[in-house]
Amino acid sequence: MSDLSQDDIRAALCTIVDPVSGKDIIANDMVSGLVIKDRNIGFAIEIDPADADRMEPLRKAAERAVLALDGVSSVSAVLTAHNAAPAAPAETPASDANPEAPANQAPATSLLPGVGAIVAVASGKGGVGKSTTAVNLAVALASLGQRVGILDADVYGPSLPRMLGISEKPKPLANKKIEPLEAHGVKVMSMGFMVPEDTAMVWRGPMVIGALEQMMREVEWGTLDVLIVDMPPGTGDAQLTMAQRVPLAGVVIVSTPQDIALIDARKGMNMFAKVNVPVLGIVENMSMFICPKCGEQTDIFGHGGARSEAERLGCDFLGEIPLDVAIRVTSDSGQPITASEPDGPHAEAYRDLASAVLAKISTATTRPAPSISID
Ligand code: ADP
Image (tube, rainbow, N blue to C red; front, side, top):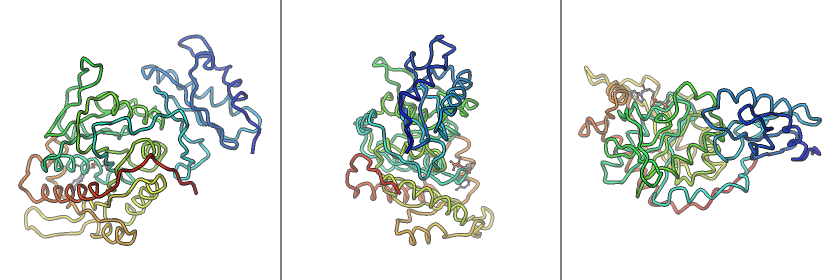
């Protein structure tokens, strides 16, 4: 154990001056969520998001100042626009980070009082068709008569505006909340409406969760049966924090059939298991290729890997979606196949997935506030 105290850290941070106000960052009350874990320090510096670029040197200077203290072995300072938790100290691998939530966080259950079930769609890595699945699942749920919203938490590559064909921005309402946009019967909110893609670099765990909470609390979602959350890919701090902070009814894991993708999917599942988020099941995307000319099936990435993996892990297999150029073309042009070809076989596959998800969440008991298990 080290003898480092919060006061030691704060004293070091008194030397860091905010260029905007001219005051030091402690006097200016910009430091929050200070965490000391052994010799590893984490904290957030609260800033106006518009200043994010020019605050990066300040963040680095703050890290250096704390690192210079005796007994400190790592420092993780993050810029945040919100009063949220800091990232776990840098030395701790994300998947093994101590995810204990700071006491200053409000219970997440109050974020979305009108929403029946929040369902995350996640993948162990990018490019496996997570967003495509999330969008088509949402539209399929709406086609089954559910009141559905979709929230794009994939700040590293917000693709929902494009996939749902939305180019306008959401409007503020008289009650200061934001009205979500609507497409194909689904209410939509995305970081892509608010953040230019080239600023994505500054998004770190606390900023992501802060923005995500804002997109829940400050958006007039109204009454929804299901809110789909398109999670960022991978298993870093942002995903872990979200899994803890958002009262998820469960998570749908998207994987391609290749072993390597399944290894990533397993990591994703382990992460959710750690924070007691139920895994509703696995979907195998790009499961098989059906030639549009001759109808022959080719298993480009192998086939059935996700099904056998689900069996092995004792979780449900929710279905398989073929690799078909029509899915790509429709989703890249803002007309998801569930909406543009509702009578086709792919829409049917997504409706089957939607029914499986509905069955799972209707039998799930209401989950209490996340409880944390630490290895
Ligand atoms: P992720 O969210 O995992 O990064 P995306 O949903 O953005 O992945 O998909 C990556 C690319 O693959 C997109 O161009 C998308 O249209 C395409 N794609 C996804 N699923 C399929 C599928 N089943 N068949 C054909 N193309 C697909």
